[in-house]
Image (tube, rainbow, N blue to C red):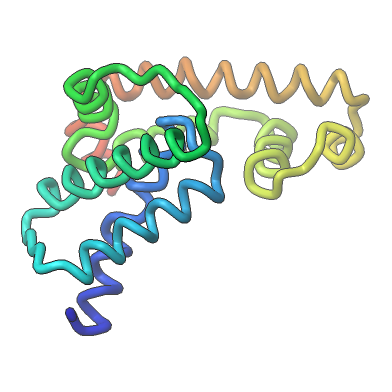
Length: 178
């Protein structure tokens, strides 16, 4: 069994990436957390050792995808997923070699282009899970106004991120770390 420092390093390096992947496949937050934990336990209990982070990431994704499909079978649910090559190709295109860091940098930069009210509404909704009514109270808008504010903010972020990531992943990552 690896030592505590090795375990923490493995989990820190791959947990966020693995959880995003499972949610991308369709898992809710609780199921994603359970499946990710199962993957780490299997890696730690087994003799499997990969020092290459990209290879470990691919191995964890494969285990997570298989765990999700087994969960669906056990609960007699069907979900139509593309074949493994398509999933990996799309995931790699969007996450890249930097585990999605380029997109996170773009998001941070694009958030600065929003109004304070829009940032507040997004923080309440996605950071704290606030309802539309709670957001409307905090922002001084009626519930439909809060809904519109969130919709417009998300659309503006999406467009901004697409433009920034389109500039080139390496250029953006270098600029985001200055």
